[in-house]
Amino acid sequence: MRAKISEIFYSIQGEGIFCGVRQLFIRFYGCNLNCYYCDTTYNEDCVNYAYDEVRKNPVEISYVQKIINESERIHSVSFTGGEPLLYADFIAALEKTKKFYLESNMTLPEEAKKVRFFDIVAGDLKVREAVKNYDEVFERTVKCYKILRDTRKRVTFCKIVLPPKFNFEEVLNSAMEIKDYVRCFVLQPIFGTFGENILKLQEAILEFSDARVIPQVHKYLGVR
Image 1 (cartoon, helix red, strand yellow):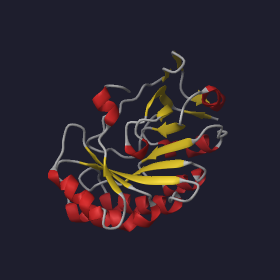
Image 2 (cartoon, helix red, strand yellow):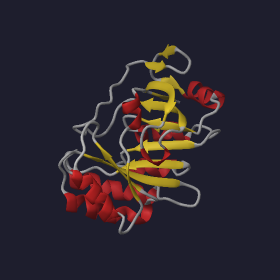
Image 3 (cartoon, one colour):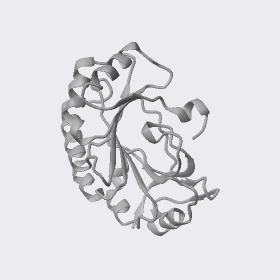
Image 4 (cartoon, one colour):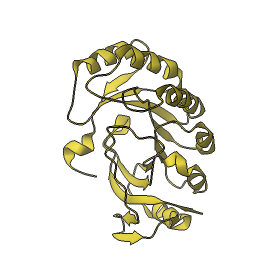
């Protein structure tokens, strides 16, 4: 089994409630959405910064498994992208020798059913201003959260990337739709921007759930 992987590297988790922990990152190639603020770029070949080497894509599963097994002093393995659920079959075939951490846009419910084994799910809740076909995207997002919901064995939290202007009531109502499936909401301003509405939104969400404002820390530190 093979998958197209853009890069593999060690760094800190720069977003969400596990901000600052050391992880092995496996960044898959490509995404099913096209959010206007996305700044992710992809390598045609797999650049493995952890081993200082380049592998031709698609990469064999045995290669990825070896890197996971040999990783030391990490909190977890972050499967990110792009959208890692595009490669759900590949991920499901890996042996979970470390904690598995999923970073997903939460819009592929059929693929989400294949990866219920994740220890941590850092899922997105897209705002209307970010994507096309918002209503369809939101419907699929709710389905994904139901499948990968927070449990005693799995930590699931929701990240909401917020532009300077957004529909306050719509975002609040959307958060209420998934509040029973997540442990916490993370309000993440787009890098370099901040608006008072974010603090007001946090205050409103705190009426029914934990809510935290956390920017992309890795960008402030200048690390990958």
